[in-house]
Length: 423
Image (cartoon, rainbow, N blue to C red; front, side, top):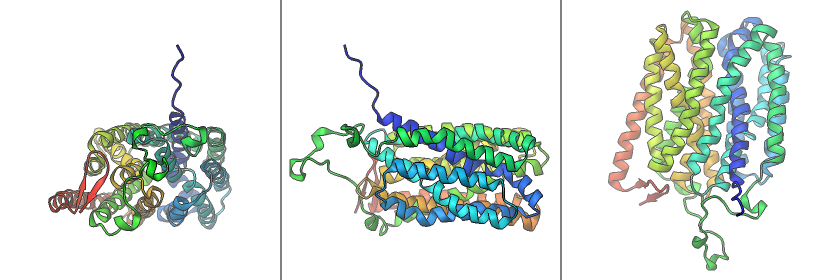
């Protein structure tokens, strides 16, 4: 009897996992390890250094709509992005001043955005009609595993070879690990191989539309007129401000309050492990309970992490803070594609996804420099954590109250099956 072959879409999941494992973790998450050594050698403030990541995120923010509308082959797009990021990361090792960091971050911002969350989300949406949340959760879990692995590696490289060599080595690793997947495994859509997406229902095809499956969901213009859409977007901005702000300064904070650099790296790695599980758990939960459930759960986890963070001079609370932060932060990457697909549908997926991703980028661009400014003004991070805690409590309460209110008015009703009914 002929063995049933593995659905090719799972190889797409593996490829997206590798993109997140390498590109998202190194470019976006490991940067916190470089804050202290780079700031010390170049004699700059942590705010000034953190601004380079704000520029990187801001560039990605600006080009997000163009990526959503682009017709470029995703294999070519992601490969070019990996090459740009790899070269730029290597170039960071040769920076003599802050301006060079800023200039490189502009180019790297373009490369980073075209090889990470948006193209990966589009790929997964093309290949999975069912279990999309699970596929996204598995693929995006790569960032957490990558952070867990590359954070201690970066810390080791900096301590042994210096931060300049660490940048160069990590840039080379990016290209060596990732390019084989983007160049040879990624395929835009199932039809490229003469197959259909996972879970695509043949009986839903209609002769009237020429055999094409009816696409459900809403256009971007329809959603932008809906209050709850903007509430979701606001929550995503706040979550990303908090998660990125903590992530970028967590290693520095742990050392400032008396922990060693090794323990700080352990906290980041532990959080990354929870980040990995969190993405898979949230993806699975979204398939079972719907997209709104993961918003509430992630907000609650981040809120609790901030409480623990303020008690982090106590070792056990520091560990809890890292774990809760890792779980809550998992929403930042899996949230946009899951919410776009399950709550807003596939009718205008690329355009809606680009806007949802843009809101995440706004939060990412604000979080790191905000904490840096607070640190420069006060000499510590405590005020940042207090502000974040108040913001998270307010955001969570507003989301839950608005959800209940909207359901009562039937203005928007989000269903477990994934699509919203707008009245």
